[in-house]
Length: 377
Image 1 (cartoon, rainbow, N blue to C red):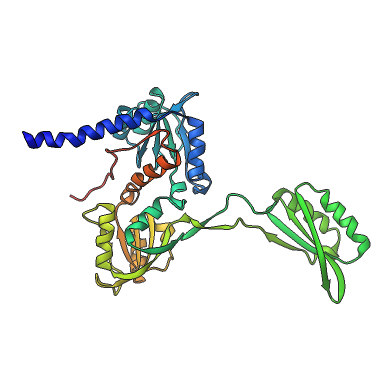
Image 2 (image 1 turned 90 degrees about the horizontal axis):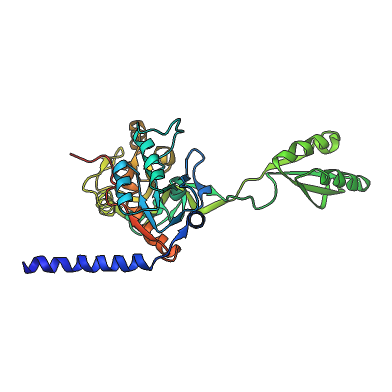
């Protein structure tokens, strides 16, 4: 009897602490919260095929006191979110991905939308934006490898160009009397900015013009230059790319400070992901005692991200059978942990980061029911 009473004390303390924290938090307007979430990890870094952002919006105004985090929004998880009085569900995987032609009670995804709207609960999904983020899912997955340095396998590009325009057009003008006419003509084209500097070609002093053009202005510039063969034949057109971001992008290529055996790495990964089993494909010529120095990781499905990456080990949730065979044939070991097992553990870190980022203004909770649909039997 005594031991039973002793066990109740921590639970009571946690409950009181939870009530105090909850009562001390304030509401956030939904649009304000969405703006903060986008500042935390920009949706612009999501893959073009993805469906991210606010997927279900209750009629405004809508305030959020409780933000509910889950990896997958199933009907069971939705019930949990409603019981915990969630105002907004952040579902890492978008529950709405393909277009819906109707909203009825027939399919489980349609029912999710109905229940969300009936209970005034918003649904937001960041998905691949959180994959790419420097503090995101792949960064968390790499923590299980031990001390290492890492970089994105496929770096993201900055959302904006560092200069105006998408193309740069450069050519030389020889005669001084032509220079003013040419500059006046190209400046008259909308979407063009002009710089000039001295140049020398064939022992002749010339002026080199550099035009930054929008996509729409490019063809007008080319059409103008084509009227003068002297300019047109020596024109250079450069495509301006957005700069790469060093710490943002898909996957991570991790170099360990010290090599470890494959067997040791397996145990580290299992501890980090809290798994009793993983699937392993040994690379050709490799054993459990083979050294691992470079690991390529990709949360979720890694086939397209990891393909062609040089590493001792691929760590991901799932890969196609043939992609595993290809990797193994190159002497690369492959560890598969099931899709969402490589993502779900990030939610606890996310809760702590968002608590700090949002200055504890709202209550943030992680689903206790959400789990990978597959398990070993």
